[in-house]
Image (cartoon, rainbow, N blue to C red):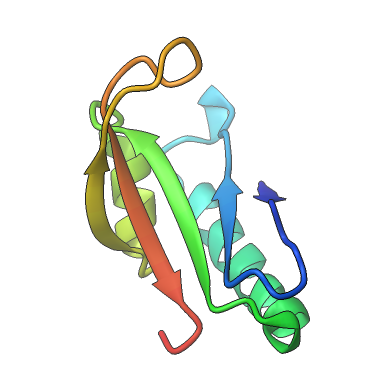
Length: 98
């Protein structure tokens, strides 16, 4: 798990993760994401953090399920940005109030 771009006064930050093959399908990612989300809001809400953003490529159905299980609402489809993001993506958002 990673929390990126946390800046005082900036309302959004990004979360990211990667799960080892042997741990996939066991709920590890969603539990870790929930822990990171709670910690981030507890730690940075006073600095202005209002939402966390999760991005994944549209063909990554497992990441979409993790986002949904962790109450990150689908927001929009993002256009591809090669080379680091070669396919269209989903943007999911979780706000402090959820």
